[in-house]
Length: 394
Image (cartoon, rainbow, N blue to C red; front, side, top):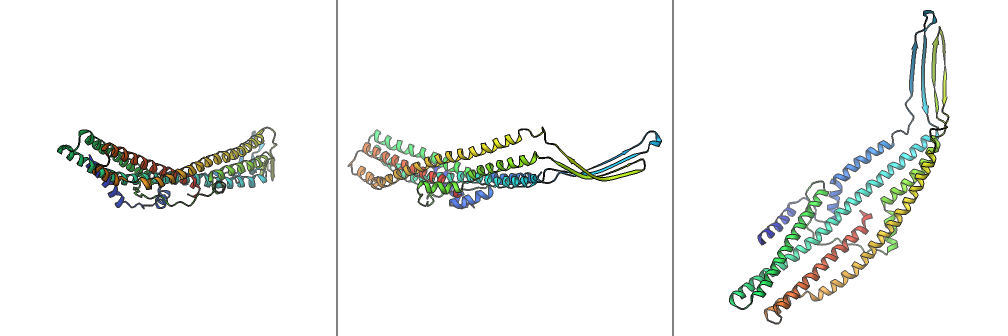
């Protein structure tokens, strides 16, 4: 079983050495930003939407009409009609359409940035998870070596009558538990690297770092909140939606004004010809009823959405910030305590010299392992929270 574990670990290390991926988070994020399929697809979608927004903001197509009518009876003569005409909205509508289109194009960019940041945050969180499991792998390898040696010693003592079955079983149980932890940990490393590969558009990435990225000191809450909101593409998109709907109110008012038609008309009948200017005007009575009311309601809804998002986002960041502060305090306390109780070597010496019983040794070693595992877990959560707080920088 140990051979299988060692093989798995060696395989992961071998792939990591031969992988073209870089071993730090920034380079991994650059690769994923370049290769991620969702980012690429949405970039193309954004181009299509931008073309759509630019469509329909110019004049309508001109129309040409031609009629040739045979007269009856034969001496009644024939009639020919020819007309070229151009329809157009009230002139101010075109400038409003252009303004709306420009705002919609900017909004598409904000939405694309939001998607990209979500994907990069997921990738960064995956790297942080991998750092945690990679660090734990190193720790588990040390524990496994000690447990194998301890189990071997107890088996020898059991054979020579220096130890009893209970002590030998405790040593074997400790070894089995560590082997199981190693299997689970190795599996998590493989799965998380597969997730990175998926985020990288199927191109292999193996991330084997064991050191968390150096993080700048998190500023006080209000300063951090200002930085986040001033760099929030989601909030920018909602504000843009609010401005778009305000412009649409203006556009709707322009669109319900009379539409006009101008052109040239030619007519020939009974040998006589007539030609001149064609003018037309639509009377806005029924077609656009309630359109302004609807657009004003949309604008009001957009305003409410902006305020709702700001309140919700403020609450989310505040909770994350409080979580960061609590984790920072707890992590500092753990570091101080673990620096004083990291005495696995002393425990082994005390056990050999008979200063402590096997029961005391197994209780103490399990207590230390559990405490150190809690520390690693807290450390991971601490960096995950920081990553989310600094999402706006991705």
